[in-house]
Length: 157
Image 1 (tube, rainbow, N blue to C red):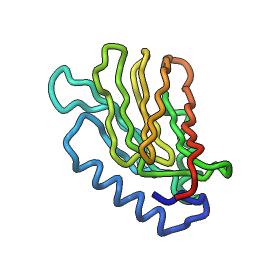
Image 2: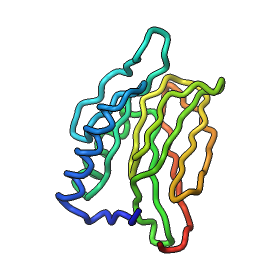
Image 3: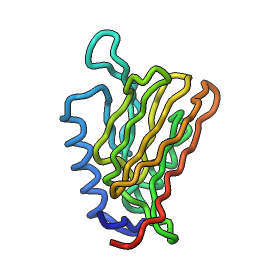
């Protein structure tokens, strides 16, 4: 997986839209949105199932700006980067579970920016990039959002 420069332009946006369409078609408990879409409430695939609405993108300056404009509407905001230049990365395997270990979101191709709408509570966020997993514990509150940055210091491929 090559790092994604924030200056990738229209091609990166098209790739993000394609990835969002593919993610939305996968079975699961999440609701995907493009960065330009209005936030929607969480949806569940079955009665009693956990669900998290999410926004995934940030490839190119236009997408980054669009996502930053709606960031305050999302209780949990994740960013993924690598190397000492902090290059954004996509293709991150992401798993978000609650305190009881129940999954709320699982993505095979997250990043470079992923926003989640979760109810207040304690969560574990695990992100894997190029075979290296990082895990963070986070408490999402009702009043203000939380920003988590995952950064990998990996050698250039």
